[in-house]
Amino acid sequence: MSERRQSASSADIATLARRLHSVAIRLLRRARRDDSAMGLPPGQASVLSVLVFGGPRTLSELARIEQVRAPTMSRMIDALQRAGQVRREQDAADRRKLRIVATAAGTQLLRRGRDRREAVLAQSLAGLDRGQRALLQAALEVLENLPQREE
Picture 1 (cartoon, rainbow, N blue to C red):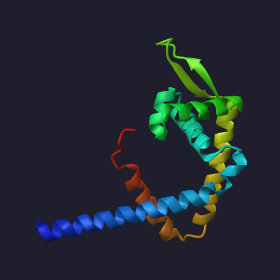
Picture 2 (picture 1 turned 60 degrees about the vertical axis):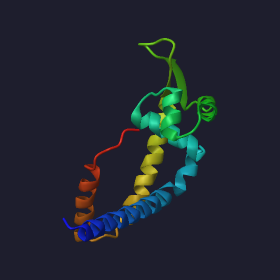
Picture 3 (picture 1 turned 90 degrees about the vertical axis):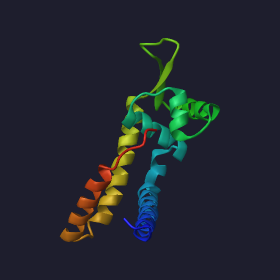
Picture 4 (picture 1 turned 180 degrees about the horizontal axis):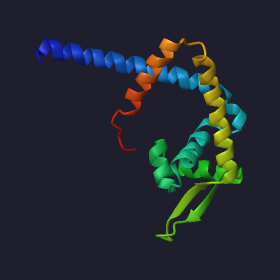
């Protein structure tokens, strides 16, 4: 591949990445407008989402995933625990470790929030014609199969 063609391809990929990022952010903003109905600040909702959909984690794992320091994560977990959304449990394999686990109430809260977000997106998608939906379906299959970076 010539150097000119390779740089054009890199520029095309960068433009595609920029557009995808922009669209993803807009879709998430639109979908989370109703998140206040959960009664949780966005950071706490994000942590609860990790626990509900990703399973129990240690405080340090959550801090790394959410890109905050351990004291900040500890305050978020304390608030979620006071609200009855999470609980701390000793790790069965290593009793020195504590795992943070979503409670049934936390799971139910997050699932209702996800249902609201999906309803907002479904309402937007309802205006697409059959061909547009087929294109979107094909694009989603490509996106779902992109290699994942570890958290």
